[in-house]
Length: 248
Image 1 (cartoon, one colour):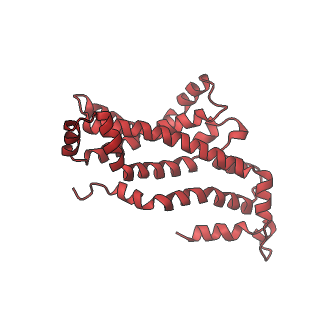
Image 2: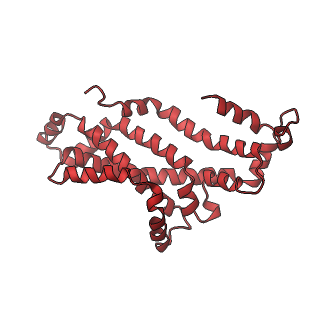
Image 3: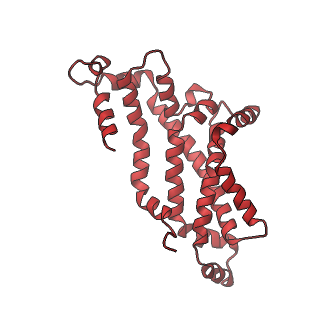
């Protein structure tokens, strides 16, 4: 598992001639990367898109998950089945109508087109995960809180959300990695070159007739580092969120 990263690091410190056989290492590929690609700007764009989409996903999935788990009604099973069914719809089958709708709203030249699309794609799975987690909270806790005078809104804010932090961390990590590494949505819904994410920038970098492999590896390494950092920060919560209720 470590070999691809070792290979990327080593080859990124070579010029194109050195990659093709000449001995030695250099910073030529890194210098070229920062000259031909606005790395800092594109990293910031990726952070803005990821943050906006994940914020929407968390708001919708936590509210929907709590409602489906604790505020059940006759249509709850069918509503939940619809959410699970939405997880099974391939992205490529909805990408064209989604593009047409977002273009009619004139959202292709800013960040909102991509943010809305990522949020729509990530909310079904996040809702499924949050619903499963909230179902693990004992009903006695909810009932006791209601008897003590808390409304369902206060129960959600003061009790359910703090208990669901592992699940929330799981959603954040999984969605961050998926959105950060995605190319198709960013390529279609971020039409302004200034607002390209780093993944789209790397895709454009490799779209020419000849590709400078060491430069591309250097850019890929820069792109991979934030996702690795996020995983390392939240790895304990990620494991706890994914294994919650496994022994019940």
